[in-house]
Image (cartoon, rainbow, N blue to C red):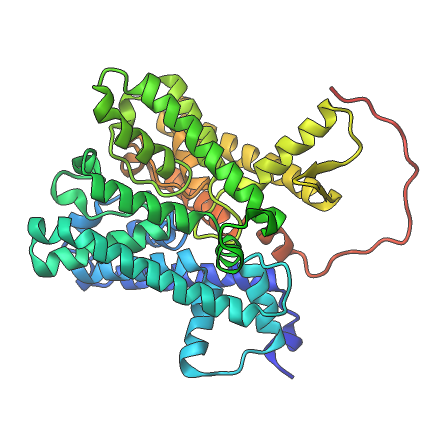
Length: 443
């Protein structure tokens, strides 16, 4: 009997355990003296936080990546980002492709859950397409960044910087090596550099829309009507969630700048806001309204089956469509000529309540513990839970309890709250009886 049959491990448990194992191994590797420039190596707390942030493709850091970690440590972080972005299951399957090992039915089922595929059939071909496409996009991104980084840093370092930032952007991780300009400076030195902005924007967007959208694009090209409903919702919701903050930043937050100098920073920040965690402007100078908008957008995150975390764009789309159907007094939730079932609506409501509860509880505890303004702390918890990585600069100054809260939130945000809940339950409990129905007034 195989280990799967003996212990009855569910797909959700395998996914959660896979992320946990990757974080643990990454922590141990970062603790090696060779991984940091600090004599004797980094402490366990810093390594655990960094490994979690890398595997969960968040980008929150307690030590500057460029100046604290050695080249070996940076390479470990980059590998963890790649594993976390593609998903630990997809990364493991990639090794099976290389070694030409047979992939069984249980493994195929786990692959389906990992990339949110609608069915098991064709999952191996789809996963192979995802892996090869991801590597090709990351390679192209690195190649396009070379003309900027090689003249500035030299050939060897320029290539390393191009590869690192291409993978970090595609995986929506937000880790950068620009601390050599100034600690935790992110991409602020390139706010008006068109090539860097455009390449990173495209990498972040492609990585964040989801693997199933890629498959529809490959199969149907520009024939949008033939796309599955999920792909249509992802594309429309993503476009709207880029446009709104773009206009906000352009017209309100950066109004002191000349119009010609606002466009790139506004577009870059609107794209990186939900998923990637890079920034080309000083976030602490944003207004309270701007920070509030950023918090809401960070909680949403990317799309299902993508390199990003968060509640997901489809969750917000389903919630919006459900509210719209109630306002219009319709019995069914529908969109693009298709009816949405009850299960997605229930899941969307559960996810929203879970994220809001974790987000507020974490922010309030950190605010009380650290003696910091609540809005600032909510910004950090939203960034962690949405696996974004944007920060108001307080992460490195937090105590162990607050860092522990952020670690848990990053893990939940990347693995998925429902995945962990389902992983904790051995089987779905079936009921043959139905309780009496009674009317309840809400609203």
